[in-house]
Length: 286
Ligand SMILES: [Fe+2]
Image (cartoon, rainbow, N blue to C red):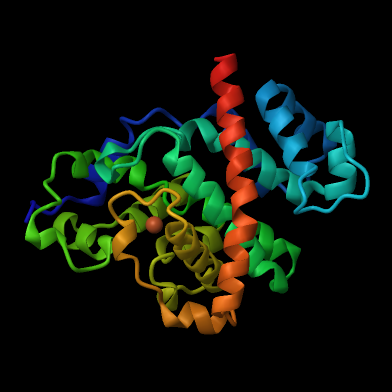
């Protein structure tokens, strides 16, 4: 077993990662600020042409069911509302962060991004019965649930996870056993440092065992089930996907069943295709 590593050691390693993109930080500030308005939203979007095009494409996707297509940011705000638009901006702004490869988890460039979008979109659909506010929060939690992998993978890169003592348990439990922390706890710590709401921090911390969640219980359950759906579709499988176990508390809490699971899988894929397209356009313009 590796020596136990403290949170501060890990956060120091997180500090070696590129900082959160400025535009993402501003998007997060905007989400936290209930007084933000159209001008703030427009300002964020004008910082990034690719982001604007993604937000408008997503706004016109089947999920939102708009009667008429929107072609401007103003229309998107009018028809979708700030809350939804914030979610789209957050997703587009963390793309450059999540797009990074995570070789420690055997995730190639773009795979963590695709997985995160799949989980975000799935969690929002699962939480839809609890109202739009919670559904959009579930999207945020899904988008950021695995962000701790970007730090923990540095340790995994130098670890032979093919050894017998790395088999037979859920991967997050193995992370805990070997490093004294898992990617969920590390991601939650990052979210806390980014001053995200406690519900999000709790959901990120407990997305692999939602029965232990508190104020983020609904979000954690939604993310957990969406994570399982994304894994079953082979999106961002990496090293940890094959040992994923579903927490029965999440199934009960979200009134979940096999039919809903299959329907969800079909509805997630268009979001992943859009996410791929976004990265393709971004790379072309880079
Ligand atoms: Fe995870």
